[in-house]
Length: 136
Image 1: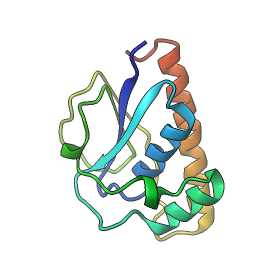
Image 2 (image 1 turned 60 degrees about the vertical axis):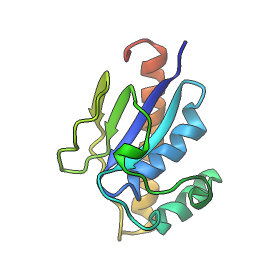
Image 3 (image 1 turned 90 degrees about the vertical axis):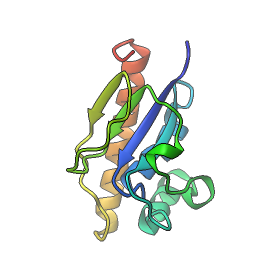
């Protein structure tokens, strides 16, 4: 089975979409390739997100990822918007969904942990739906 390419998209590509890319690579790389991108760049990934993902999952996003624009990633099969409350530019795909996640930026560690755990759950759900042939 050809691995699908999944893009996690948000405005700044600095927090939720970066967390999703990291967790997608950790938890579902056997089923899909994970990318993240945004419509605007930030000079660095949200450092609270970096710290929480490192604490919870042992991934240092500062070493493995950077902020990217939509044009910086390959063509993808699945687009997941994080809940940006904006219309993302058209990105061709065979499946699109919105996860409706609130941005934890500027909030407590508990909010970042809650967001990370919700992303983990949604990554596993997406992985299972792909394996079951519900997305193709």
